[in-house]
Image 1 (cartoon, rainbow, N blue to C red):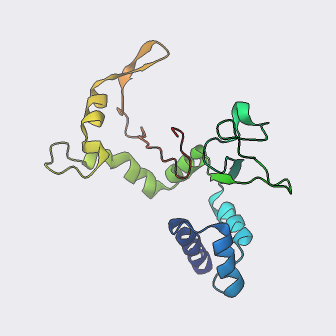
Image 2: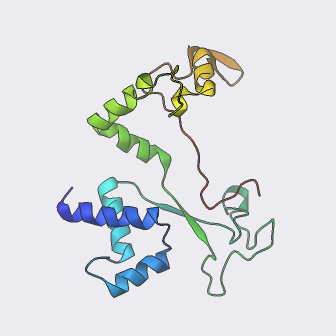
Length: 179
């Protein structure tokens, strides 16, 4: 990455980390354009370098529902009846999604990162008195002993047998599926 891109991406990271809304970021951009480029430029540059395209989905203002699947054509939330659109036809609220598969491909495309990901779990001490990582936990250790069961069949491999196997967590920041 160029020095300019590193600075640009640091700004993008800080926007996300500080949970700044687009309007808040744009107010900085208007006041200090030499330091804070337009958000549209910033997003296009991140997309261009990473190869990962952000996907937007309409959602309820109260985080009750995302208008996907069977809810795609609804005009109001099926739970709280809040309108989906403003009078001008724009969505009341959207959430941004970075598709998972391209992110994982990007992680493994870098040889140094792929080596770290493939060896990380093996370096965790399951007998440590202090738990510092999920890979030291009871559930992970129990899964390692079990054979994978899928579609009513038991496979010949155990969970997390291969160094390339991935364990993931899910964060639903801003969306409450169990409200």
